[in-house]
Figure 1 (cartoon, helix red, strand yellow):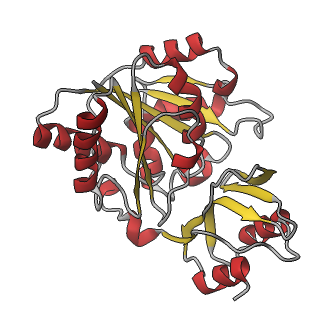
Figure 2 (figure 1 turned 60 degrees about the horizontal axis):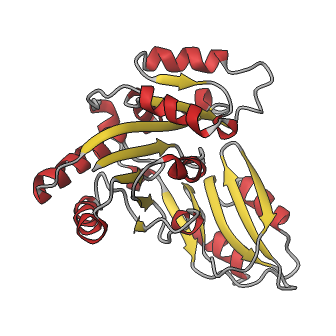
Length: 301
């Protein structure tokens, strides 16, 4: 069995990558989704019939370490998978996730390799946020493969970002184009070419407690909107009136029975109409969130 870790900051595109990557893996793959928020959404977004284990309201590298180790043992006992794909919280330290995997191996006596560390980087805002959020840089430094997302907003290309990334990690394979458009064989060749090397901690980065810096607001089943539209909700979240919103995602219902999925990241915001397939829940992640105001925005109370 091998374990592969797909890291990246909030909204970078980790789940999108996993959905593209899953069909390329031989044998049985299971996914562990770790979300910082109180409810899990990404597990509902994994396509196909892949088994998914969700770990919520914390990070597998710290508060959920024991639950994570138990999950690996339980997934092995139940499925005997060939691969485990781990999508840690966007604010997790990649080195600590690797350490948690190694702890699970020692505690459970399992035989597996941590074969690949893949990091998705938001190319349009990387330079703006790397100094504010140390774990953003740590995920880059410990990656074997770095893929860029949100690059359409860079009319002058990605050369400058790639140059900075190579300065932080000269060993990683870095793909500067749109990986979403790659043929499966080409994407797999990039993954296979990525090197394996020890993940290194940083004393400064380990001083950051994500649970103390960030907060989240979640609603399991938001009531139907009245006169508000998805555009109105997204503009409100971006206004600053509700705190520094870094990520918002989830399902909303309209007054006429319509269903929407909203998706806000540090790179922008969008929404789409969706079918009512039973998916539900909404989460907002950020700093200094105004939770009473957020509750009123989504519930009117």
